[in-house]
Length: 367
Ligand SMILES: Cc1cc2nc3c(=O)[nH]c(=O)nc-3n(C[C@H](O)[C@H](O)[C@H](O)COP(=O)(O)O)c2cc1C
Image 1 (cartoon, rainbow, N blue to C red):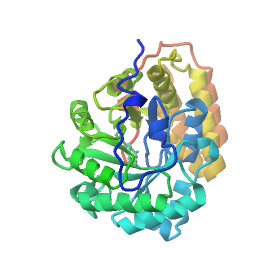
Image 2: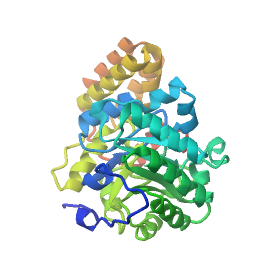
Image 3: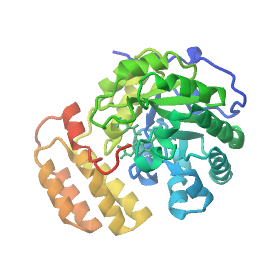
């Protein structure tokens, strides 16, 4: 079945805000519209490069970076927005509760890196962010949200600016007014995470509410929340008002989901699921990229957080995982993955929502 969802470039509605980007927006020019979500401590440059090597056309986002951290020159924060050319189209995501700081941070990042877009995080529910009126907290003050977008657009010098929100803080309809205020202020696109602020990550995303909101908003909308399989992505993309999909947890340690989703939405033949050799090969590549960027100790530890996702679904997945968490060096980790690559010809694999969800190791961060 060819599924292209409601994507139709000709139907992308345009509203002329006060300042409009002059660059081709990735959200207007890319069809199908498929993105890997911004995820703190996950979508760093090594992982984005890996995803790019497998899924050449999806839009990539940096982890969210605090605007004032950038302005203070914090190296750790600047590292978050650094990217390589091959990562394009690449969107830098920022958060803060001070519109002027967001504007100035956009100018600073633009001067250094010229990303393909800037995104304002209005979805993070973590207390230390949201209670200060940043992240999802900004949904409570549409005027501050709009002013933030206005400042960002002013300083973006034609680079398009988007927003990523939730359905609301308390009511699932809140998103419409907030997003429309941001569009008036110059936002080119919105991504809607189909949950409320207080919803736990296991709370099912509310796709009908997402669609109801999306139909009332006149810029390209990416739907986000609970895309674990290609079929999920097809269903989400076919919702009324939804122009594309943004994949978060389902894409951790699973760059193939991004590629296969893109293929399905483009009406192309979808690659088979990767076999164990391919999974091991890519996990090894991820490890090497981590170590090259961050040094051996950190690179190995960070791979551990996601490696279960790469190797799930096989008879020796657990054994391999136990081995990997025991060892501390890159060589030993590579050997464990090598052994996995040549493991028993076993169980057939299938995309299994529950399995994928159960194995995603995202406990420490709940955005
Ligand atoms: C580990 C982790 C880190 C996240 N970091 C960010 C972030 O930096 N910026 C952001 O907008 N959302 C962040 N999110 C939220 C995701 O982008 C996404 O909105 C959410 O996980 C819902 O999508 P899903 O159900 O497909 O996982 C994060 C989510 C996770 C699991």
